[in-house]
Amino acid sequence: MTSHSHACPPLSRRALVLAIAAGAFAPRLALAQSADDPVETVRAFFATVNERNERTFLTREFNRLFARQRRRSREMDSPLPGLDADYLCMCQEEEDGWKNTLRFELVAKVDNRVARVRVKFRNYEEREVIYALHRENGRWLIDNIEPPGERSWQYRLQETE
Image 1 (cartoon, rainbow, N blue to C red):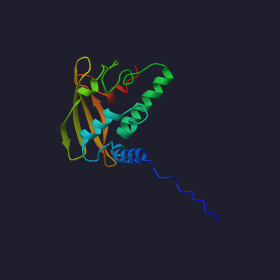
Image 2: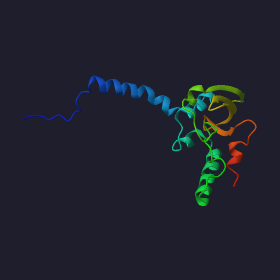
Image 3: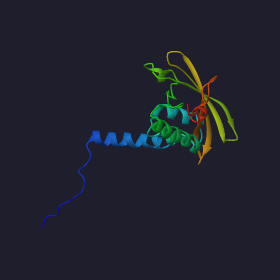
Image 4: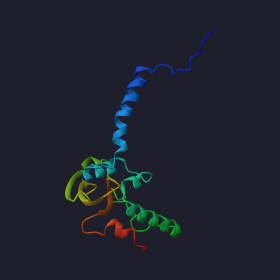
């Protein structure tokens, strides 16, 4: 009587290396929103955000404002304030390599509940923006985006014209 094994064939050396490498990066991706460091949350936001995963970086209130403004924008068939420019580059067009110029700085942290992170970069010109973060469910999450001298993103997302 022959026994047939249904065990998986052994991994090739290349497959094993790829599996180990993928495992090494998995915890970093899972913990993109830092429990300890608001700067790391903003850094991860710039490195990985897209419309599908942005909500994992934002507070419940900031997500609610984005969702409501996107709904109103679809109903009006027109981009509304807060949706008419890229909140990462503060622009409508990106200069090649602009993310390579990013500089992050913690400017305030109060009672391990609120923090402000300054981001400076070059995208056709020198730019600066402040990210306001709150701790929510044990993680640092973005609650507002504040370009100096301009209306904040929370304010823009509440405008209808």
